[in-house]
Image 1 (tube, rainbow, N blue to C red):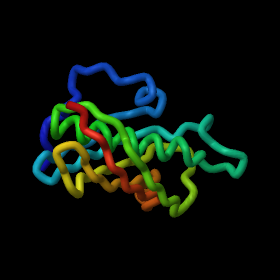
Image 2: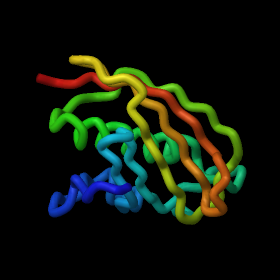
Image 3: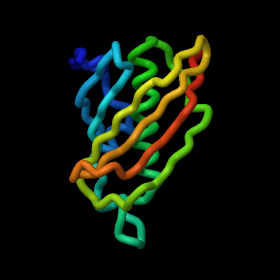
Length: 132
């Protein structure tokens, strides 16, 4: 079951807008957030696939907002480990982040990115510092 969009009415940060951020679903109980992004042609590297830094930014831009939606607290990524499983062609992609453990000052997350055909393309784990 999807909860309401926790970001409704808020302006997108410029980086999220550049990546083509769009809300898909949020589940407070399961502690998950799913977003869509647009892997644009101008994100492609010389190998003809979307450069990994853009894909990483998309996953990171799902994990941080998930923690903010759950806690109401801002913070920052402490570390981010990424595994690239397959090249991603330009087009719509979907990212999902899930909190695996929530501490008082650090949240631990995992996430993945699927390409336009629904194939798992990138996996990531992260720890996120919670301010205040």
